[in-house]
Image (tube, helix red, strand yellow):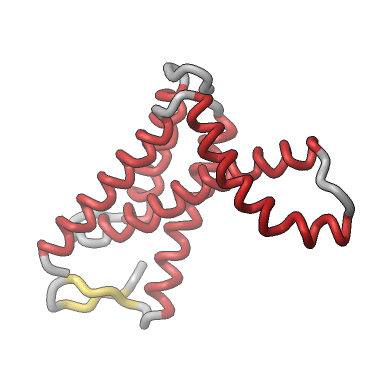
Length: 165
């Protein structure tokens, strides 16, 4: 891969990391409003079918959906980070155990992200969220490796083809 693509991937990874931190800097009320908006869209889509099968959605059900959306957002943000981090480190020739470096970066960012939330009004840093984040990173890394294997079991490094490890 040429240096221009390596720089682009590095910048994308850093920008995505910044996006993750920016979401954590939202005060609790703003964060809740954002996920509540997503919840509203999802409920508009699923509630007619849900109500035909199970009856009206209760307040407890809505709260459960909202909790799920918030955790799914954590997972998804960090899954993208896993894809970007591994895609970036695959281009560093001297680096070994590239998947482990990508996972370690994801764990570092997840830990910093949850620590950051301790200082934001209405937010809380949770070890459980770090676990969800790390599962997202792991999924992103595994999907990237799977994609490379399906694509032919190798990835390009300059003009040399190297087997994916």
